[in-house]
Image 1 (tube, rainbow over the protein chains, first blue to last red):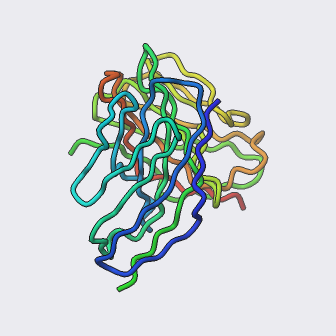
Image 2: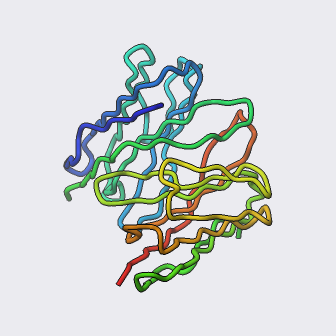
Image 3: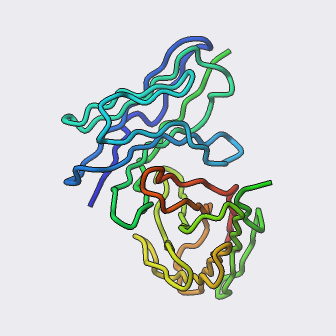
Length: 117
Length: 114
């Protein structure tokens, strides 16, 4: 069984600053995906970024990037030039890779991020 | 527009009643999922289905039932056997392509037991 841990229940940062959200996971799988999802006050879950464990290169999506350390089982999210619209709950999630595809997601408990004007 | 719809947005249930939450997608995704979200606990998987007429229990299936008669639809029934059903319920779907395994979420249904 997999577990995902987000050790920062809440964080806040000034607008335009950079913030890093932490995530660690535990698994015996060698091939898997890792995700960061964002849940704003509307409660819609929005995919932020996705990382394949077999890729050494860290994923980036505009202002969002990850620091993936496979040996340490660490997957942090960096938000650069933070904006007010980044205020949300952020969830880290794990998915094993199977022959069938698109297995279940295991989520962390989330980090509530507040961007201060 | 392509997407995932859930209805109703808010649902109130009296104790002892069964209720059904709707989830529809027009993304041509094979896989569909139901998650439950409680404060401070993240999302937990209730049921999932990767093909029509087949589904699997997730981590917290007790007190819930599902059906998958059509590729586009994956309704969730919360039965009276579910001890604490008040929660936010999220439906998700995704393709079975392995190279792009990702799940996309609907807007959710807030269920309150009166």
